Image (cartoon, rainbow, N blue to C red):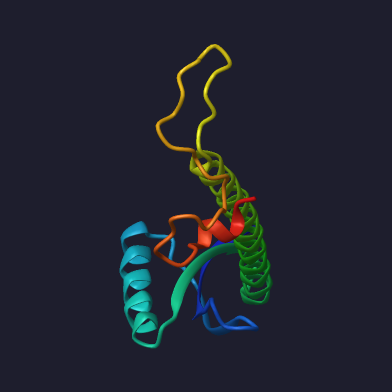
Length: 139
């Protein structure tokens, strides 16, 4: 039969640093009071309290370590996926910036003559400032 256990420790340490394991009382109001007391003490030293369901203290330690490792794996996977999405978004934004930086070509039906010739992209004609980051990236 499993019971709730308070596991107190530093959840960001490598390896996980567990300081205290205590079976939670059956009474909900006592559980809350003890949890709050443990949490206040743990916060003072940059720790935290987790509640795990286990058969005994040894099982509670194993359960807490497993849950911490699973949480860390989910965070790493999320961060890796987020970094890949941000990279793809940055590349798409750069491609869009290059497309919008190119001078538009007149339609074939447009027979008007422009008042001044438009230099090709990247041409230094008339440039008074150094090339920008976008100028160096755009073909």
